[in-house]
Picture 1 (cartoon, helix red, strand yellow):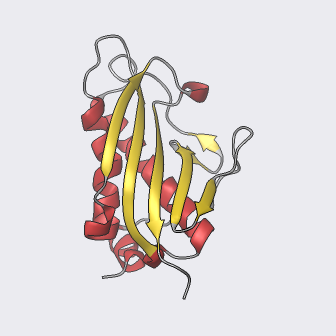
Picture 2 (picture 1 turned 180 degrees about the vertical axis):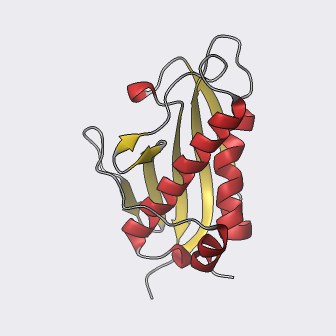
Length: 155
């Protein structure tokens, strides 16, 4: 099944890529490596989840925010290369979790992003990963993810 068909089956419609919130570009292609800038829980240019995990948000809410961040990352891939079929593999996911002192479940929160990538891309979505707790993220976002993706040449 193609990633596009899988998205449809999952009831996911990829959004339009939001404009960067600061001085950077959403993606950068270098050879077959596509770097996706940090993506957060944003819909229509608006942050839809804010707060610290372990204080303001539950793990389940963090998982949902990470999942939405991964959907936005997939949209950035499509915007950069035209089609998810060009994804050879997700190489690396770096995940950052806005964490209250003592919160130690960053790995579970980032499963929201990791599992979404596998759900959509199958084995091509499996990746190396870091799940890092931090005391703050831009504009109070609870999570932010960045990806390194290998893509095939355009045919």
